Length: 400
Ligand SMILES: [Zn+2]
Image 1: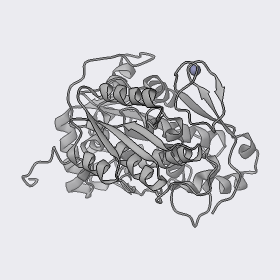
Image 2: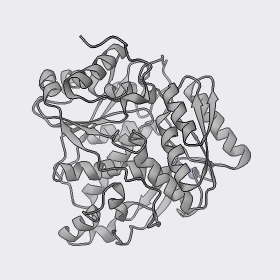
Image 3: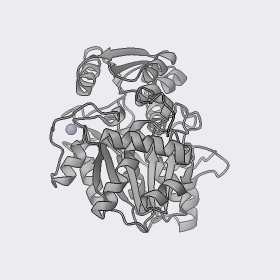
Image 4: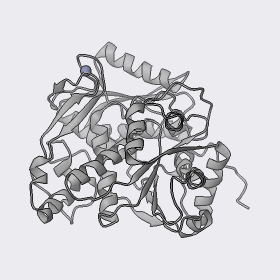
């Protein structure tokens, strides 16, 4: 186990800039209710000679999972709430890539996780921190994957969990949450109504709001995606990363991770980060296309990509700004394309992902057409969730 000291960390409000210690059970700014961000002081680590720095960042080569990167994770515990999450494989998609005119197309299979979605990266960090600051009861709202992940890790940490879910969430996801022993609270109305109900409960009875969208430690966990990609591509990451984006926890975490690696002098160049959304719900792509600073409320429609159906993303402005700073762009795909790519991935590459994840492949022809990616570039797509999580859209007839 890596016993290197962790980098110094504090919390800061993204709205009023107030600085706060990171050892209290806070999920928003006590002054203005703004979103909190973790501030890491990487300078002690950056001051080390290159090889030593790299060794500290990579952690113990004999250890599996994202806690290898504990030197850059703002958690004191040497005994994290973990099930070995992270270290997900990268595979080359030769057949699908050739069909698209992208011979260097790769997928990082994030469903290789204890609860079968990338959310476990963020949850392991957030729940470990919650336990560290004495949280006993936690409330979260989720369309399914984050809820299942948080229910699982809370069960392991001995924290009581209540998960607010949209009434329309896939049955398999709701069943998975309940199976871990969490309280499942179905809420009618929009996804935003579910968030409001969960926050209302926290304000009322003082429970900790362990939201994957609000909690700053969640992004600390998802940033390990970037640390792994850097390693898997020998510190010369693909030119493009494409991520399905709802509230953007993987997108923002990855951007943060790549930024840290550059600050640490371990990367010379950052990848371009592209946002994939469904045309039924595309506030971020809309803001990028119209060159807005922040997302606007635009009409949304039901989509098969339920995991990213977020009309008012809490960190919308940050996502827009990250995509733009990276030189990336955004594209949206209609449901029929998403479902076609979900099927193609299965029949051509043996990868069974949920529709939300297939969205990131369905936008590739558009990104190529826009000139945002070029045929000779290396493109990595995050496959965020397992297909069995959402079988509501599967046809019963075999593929032709
Ligand atoms: Zn504030």
